[in-house]
Image (tube, rainbow, N blue to C red; front, side):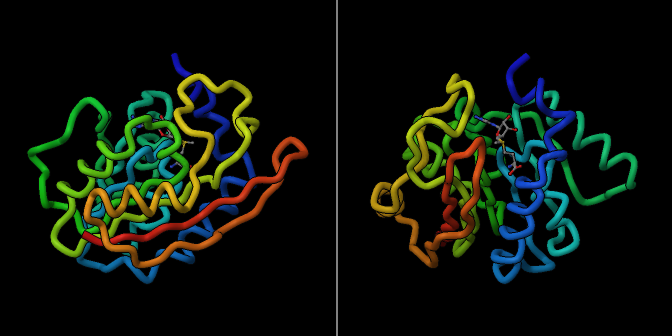
Length: 200
Ligand SMILES: C[S@@+](CC[C@H](N)C(=O)[O-])C[C@H]1O[C@@H](n2cnc3c(N)ncnc32)[C@H](O)[C@@H]1O
């Protein structure tokens, strides 16, 4: 059982996560369309997937934590949601080739810092997107390693803008937007989140 499995039940009891989700949604709505097939990668309990379900046609919500997906599946069943499909999958080890070119938009929030090989995951996202599809990332700016209590499975202590812009270039993504999104305190330390939108 990993840390996400353990924390799944209480995940949404953190007001910061709810606030952060609301800010993300307010800033990305303009990129979403009622005909879109969207992926929420590293969906967790589906905070993003659930919030966009009425703005798009279908959401494929992917995670590799059984505990997180259990919470999401329970919400979906309880509310009879028809357009979120939940998949237990890890794109680090499974490139999901059968869905190549199928997504209008891929959203990844607070998950990129758990993935070591950014070039590889960006290549996979690029291949999964339709032409002109959007990749939307919300994550931490560079931090000093204090954000997580335990840094097991934390591959990056946030990201610098320069690093990500270079990785976007390497994968041929076109930059649409990069901005400071949200500033918050956690355990008496201050962190900044960015929002980045690129296009295939
Ligand atoms: C910090 S949580 C973010 C959850 C959600 N996106 C949110 O904003 O509330 C990170 C999530 O990414 C998932 N995750 C981490 N590495 C992953 C991988 N390689 N493949 C799929 N999911 C992954 C974890 O299981 C966890 O649910």
